[in-house]
Length: 192
Image 1 (cartoon, helix red, strand yellow):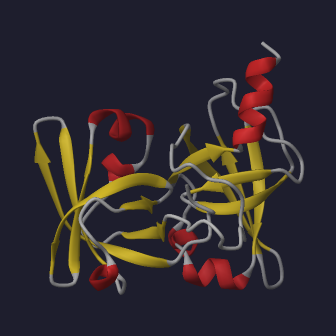
Image 2 (tube, rainbow, N blue to C red):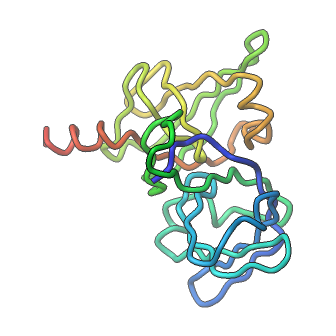
Image 3 (cartoon, rainbow, N blue to C red):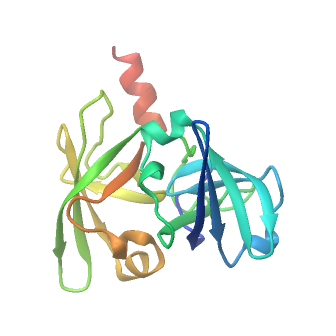
């Protein structure tokens, strides 16, 4: 379980295919604090640490994860939002995030708003919903929805989030991972 509060940004240093799996090696400031079998969110995708060597650790993404996320688009040198799982008893500064990405979306607009930024994302309506002022997780970042539509939404990004996540790398057409609010998913399922 995660909160959507990105701890730091990691850099992809190696990508190795093995059958349908992708081994992703990352360099982060927290590598020395990690352990084998630990879960970390990578752009919102929960992956398990399988190896650590110096300041680099490796996780493995299976085909299911590669099909539903933007991990298959990673390249060496890319920056990835990293969050360690939450500890019981810690403050929940974001919202409840499972690290189970529902689908991807495309960035379709970026508007600078005098010290902040408004990003708009378009996604295929697969039954997932957003609500005005509800929570959404974009590339592992807990955010508040503005301008909720059937297949799009916007989020407002403050300078701190812009600087300390990979939002500063987004362009029109960037593919992002979406995890919709767990409470909204249960309510939508009950109403079917």
